Image (cartoon, helix red, strand yellow):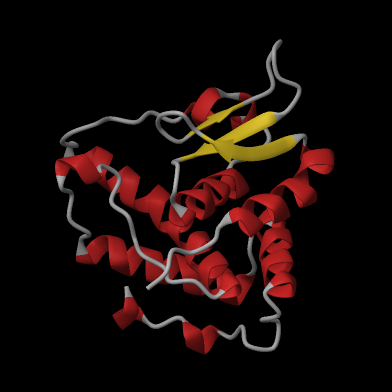
Length: 179
C-alpha cells in the first residue's frame, strides 16, 4: 500500500480557516501541539507529527472540539501525562478522545482513507481497549445523527467536495467491527 498523500488535508484546512479563524496547521519538529497566537505569531498553529495523515486529521479534530476559550491556551489547556494513568485519568481520556476520534473517523471516511484509533501513548504500548472502541463508535454515531461542531462540519464538507465523495458518504460506512 502506498503512503497516503495528506498534503491536500493541510491545504484544505489552511484555505478554509486561515482567514476566518486565524488558524493554520503545520508540521511539528517534535510532538503534536496547539499553539495560540502570541507576540511572534499572528496565527494559531495546530502542529502535527511528521509523516502522519492520522496526526493531521486527529489534531484538526481536537481543534474542532475546542471552544473559543480553550483555543487561547497552549494545547487547549489540557494536560498530557506520559506513562500510566490513574483509573480516573483513563476515564477522562476515554471520554475526551472518543469524541476526537469520532470526528477523525468522519474525516477519514470523507477523504476516503483508512481510520485507526491511535492510543495516547504509543511508546508505552497502550492497547486500544474495548471501552475506547465503544466510546468512539458511540461518539461517531452521535455526531452523524445529531451533527458535528460547526468547524468540523465545514472541514468535512471541504473533504467531501475535494475527494468527490458527497454521494458516497453515508452512516452505513461506519461499522463497529472495523475499529
